[in-house]
Length: 128
Image (cartoon, rainbow, N blue to C red; front, side):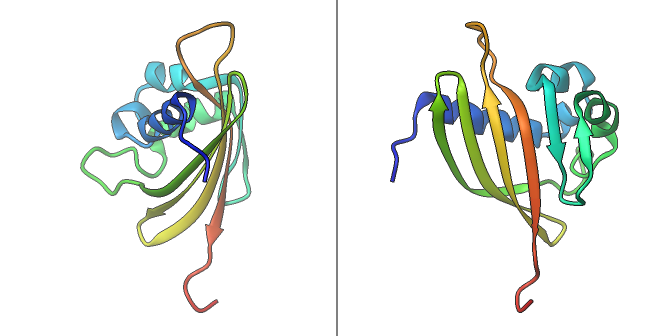
């Protein structure tokens, strides 16, 4: 097992922040967390761009403070190169589970890690 680095811990913290309703509903906070080159392939198979995600995020699952939230588990991360972390985890939301993979990058000596790429793959219900 690989030792968890400060970079991996920073990526995990960023992933958790993006699951927080207060970040999901704040365009300015979400903008800080997503790299301008961001792309996502969602669990539905839809491809999302940076601008599409920022526009839709406040209406997506997990954006209501008093509503259901993503429950993440099994985080693993690898520092691929300076300023680039590959992070994986599983989430549960409303009884549905997904495996998630994301790339986090930190550019130009900046202090902020930003999500560059994200993909979610549904986990079939038990017995399927």
